[in-house]
Structures are given as structure tokens and as C-alpha cells.
Amino acid sequence: MSNILLVSATSLEHNETDIEGIPIHIVGVGKVQSAINTTNLIKKYNPDVVVNFGSCGNLKHYPSGEVFEIGTVYDDFYGCVVPEHEPITLTESKYKLFTTDTFYDKDAVFSNHYTSMIRTCDFVDMEGYSIAVSCNIENKLLYCYKWVSDDGDRNSWEENAAIGFNNFKKLFKTKFL
Image (cartoon, rainbow, N blue to C red; front, side, top):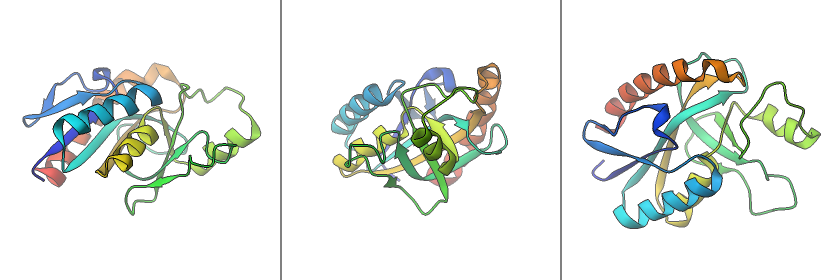
């Protein structure tokens, strides 16, 4: 791939500025910041492909640090009164990502609708869906990779984020370089 836009929510997930000379652009945590910043980066760099990567919460029983290619992203408004928030299919991968603006807490009590949506997905993050919307609007191909950093317990996040980023770098070099 000749022109890759590499985006991540926060440098806390990796503490590096590039992978093999390809700059890592920080789009921010949460749906609004990541949508605005991704759109601005696409307009500035006009990439052939956008690659989003980062940590995620585990909604099933996947191993910490393992990297997964996301096939479909869901917004937490899906199925509510906002019909334009349909799931977005990225690739043939079976893995589903649920995007919300709330840090996932496995012990929190959610509405029945929210809980049923969480149960249909594999992972939860705070940027995937909005980055996908930005890429769709700008007609850019998006690959999204997430690694499990926690299962709703924030105490394990930092250690698992470092393991996941090292695994992602290996995958990125194999697939894109």
C-alpha cells in the first residue's frame, strides 16, 4: 500500500510516533473527537487506506494482547430512534466491535437494549464506529485492528495494551509493508 493513514485514539496505547516510518496519528478518545480528527486527517493526507488500531474491552473470552481484525462495527445508538446508525461492515472478519462513549465496566447495570447489543459483539471501544463513518463519507478503505486490553477491569489495561501493540506491529508489518 502506498499511502497509509495510521490512526490510534491515544498514545497511551503504544507510546510510539510511527511504525517503520509511517506516522501514527492520534484521533482522540471518544466518538466526536475521533470522527472530526479522522475526517481532517483524510482531507489533509488523502490516503489510499486508513488503518485504525488500539486497545478494546473484551466482551467474550478472548486472550489479552491478541490482535483481531474487526469485520463489523456497531454504534451504541443502533436499534434506537436513530435509523442512520446502522452497523458498518469493514471486512469478511467475523469479529464485531461495539462503539460507545462510555468506558465499559463489566459490573455496571445497563438498559436491556444496551445489554443485548453488547452480547452480540466481541469487543467494545470508543472510536471504531466513528472512524468507520468518517472513512465511508470520504470514500476511504478502512482496516480496524483491536487487541484485548481488559474485560471491564481497568487495572489490567496498561500491561495488556503494551503486549497488544507489539503484536499489532508484527501484523502491520506483515500485512501492509
